[in-house]
Length: 469
Image 1 (cartoon, rainbow, N blue to C red):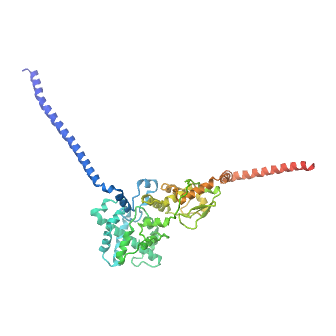
Image 2: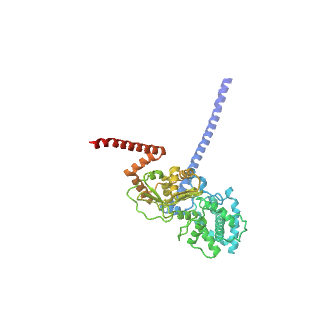
Image 3: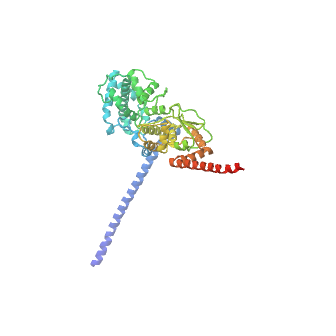
């Protein structure tokens, strides 16, 4: 056998070995594909089983009960992005789980612990009784928070209870310090130079504390305060008393209710809105309304309402009456949180978002703000009128045009009906054309005088001609 034959024989001899390797590789690849398919099938099967176990929770009655439990919410990103993201969280002290432990809020944790110790010492009862009182309703308290992190659930439930006790005791001690200050006394339970609970500190920090208490993401259920006071006193306080205590903390009058409020912001909301009057919607509706300057040019006069209620807005006999709108440093934060609460918590009335929409419609420029100030309907304590317009440009992102069947919707229709009358339209055109600029007005007066003089000259020229005959 020559060398060429030997090489061919060698090649053919190796071929079965090559085919065998390829077959093994192919089988391994097939197994890998099969494993992936089985893995996906296993995951799909697990997902199907998981979803089937949740079928009962998808019933409307079950979902309704779950949503009804929620009253404290994280503000969605689309709201924060369009408005002021810092308005909804705490700057000084945290209440509840959403912002607990954030670095800039940690210094207040020491004062919360001090508050717990003072409450326990004054009550002369073991701390365990306070903890047990909160543990009894821990599930209910957790259910109040929408999208509560797992770090507060299950085995960490005790951590959640500790936080509720600490935050609740801090609020009770701060309210006690406030009441002592209002009585003109000295808080003997704390040093005179205490940075939080002394009379001087209470007066200094109140505005900042109030701002954090109405932040949407910084709430605790008022049931916490009621439970802690029940242990401290030995008898449970009424819902009306707890509501009153929170009203005093927020310095908001005019709200009395025997049903326990949900949290600080809920009490603030009810005080701001008051009682919604009964109203039957009209058949006619027009969501548009001219700005304040245009209304004034159309002959509409402005008048301050007899009450401070946002529902006390009316239009009769050419007079638009509305409550005094006070604009101060915290107005934007207050209104953003009130409107966010209406957006997130089930509320068919939408009182605040509609009222702000109405006010925003009549404020388009600095001239409108100046006009409303001059007639006593606006109080600007934040500086320039331009800053007010800028604030409303932010607020209007959450505002909503009043509904057809609302009182404000009826006011808008009556105002527009007045402006559409021919004589009022002519008056507005005349004012815009000739009275908006002093030089135009002077030119108009000069033209009228010249016309009158020309007519008189013509009369004096013609009259002698006829009298001679």
